[in-house]
Length: 343
Image (tube, rainbow, N blue to C red; front, side):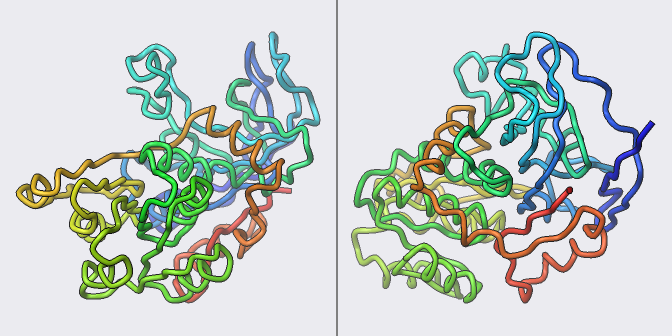
């Protein structure tokens, strides 16, 4: 039997590359796919550092996947061998109160590939057919592997009910923050970005045409007032995954404003209750995305309304991940999005 290469995060800070048995043939409603591209995101970096909630070791990472269909199980007629697809990695039960309400992204027993269950840093996997989103208009495998990241931003912006022209601040210019920027701009928001990293702010300015790029410092509230004046921001997204930043974000919206927590942190957050009530703030959590988000993003990409060309700054072959991954955590590497080639 042919073996396949698999990269496993055995414990914080340590990957192994091993030969493992390939998956069994797909069952009814399932599809065997060849993993071709794997995007690396903050969830993976946090898992490597030992700071990822809802996580156990050892784990095969990989939830941002561009795949090719190899074989289909009984009853599958939505994809055929040779199709290239994005994988929606959120395995929901379909029966709980959240699923019945269409909120499959926060299913009460959710399993996410590469987080709660083994993911795609291996040559092939079996996935439910309804979690595959095919491109019929020539999207590349790398574009398909970016859709999950884009879906996080799309869902967060939908949760926010942003209005055209609304003064909007995005804190954090990593991949998740950039996905929020992209969809807030598509919605017509007046977007500014705050980050500690000058290189990432320069990236926002040059690649996403963000005019107001705010360097986070000792007085973030003062810097935001200088950028927006007294009438904004009315909407603040925090995409940092940093507890101090997330707590500081509660002080940044003006009266009647909203805070959307996109990043996830291991631990508790607190806020000043009089300050919250005085401004009658709305605080929203945003988790994952939905099938509708995946389909909408594929349509927008196929129409050319989302340009993914600036995103991928670093690449590595699967076999090189154990030796390369740690370097992607170094700010000096200027990683925006790293992509793993499984071919």
